[in-house]
Length: 295
Image (tube, rainbow, N blue to C red; front, top):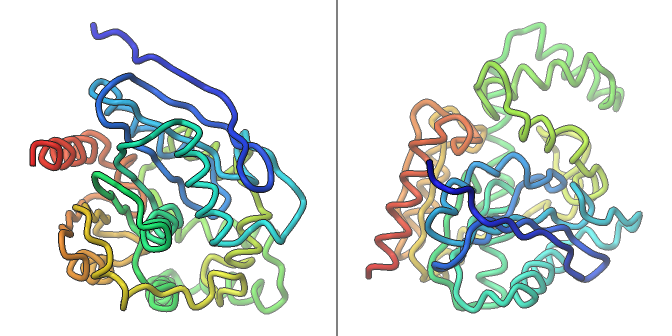
């Protein structure tokens, strides 16, 4: 039996507070992993730690969620500050060379960091993070229109009254999540942790808004880098689930727009292919990293 990978945990000072990080493994070119939300914790992407047999794999909870500080200051929840947070984590951990992974909001953050800072990167892995918020919301609502009529009525009724915290509304949202977020019958503990006690409402409400389906009332409204994709020149693996709330056709726009981009669709997955098809996903990422480093 292989030995368990080395584990290093601690906190890092970033703009606005301190964030918790967890690193697995030693050696190799590190992989820094950015979780989604905004506001989820890193727990749901922990399966990427399977790669720690060959390299250091680093997770951290972004400010405002998980085991990181949770300041009550809405001015902190901006894209610019989040980009600065990634840079601070990288500098503190001495990641001179690294691969960068991001899922959902974490992929948007990874791409904005790449565009804004023009950092030295070995590669990008972008999981279910399309280049246009407006199109993403429109396509999520196309999927919502395919839910049972009674579920759609509950969603519409509660949204009209701004009753987003009502158990009946959250149950209706869960019908959508079970189709397009994570299709496993029983959600792994990491997913439940990230969606439950690890979740930070402050970043989510300020950056996105009260409803998954929009309209986006936060400061991610209008985010669109479709016209800038050619500026991302590092090798980029784009992944998506066939049943994803972020549609494969939209993710294909991302992969096609990046000069060194490639798209992989996981046929049995939705938004969390690294959980739903864990072995296949990790193997795909492993092959990509090996190919990039060999080149």
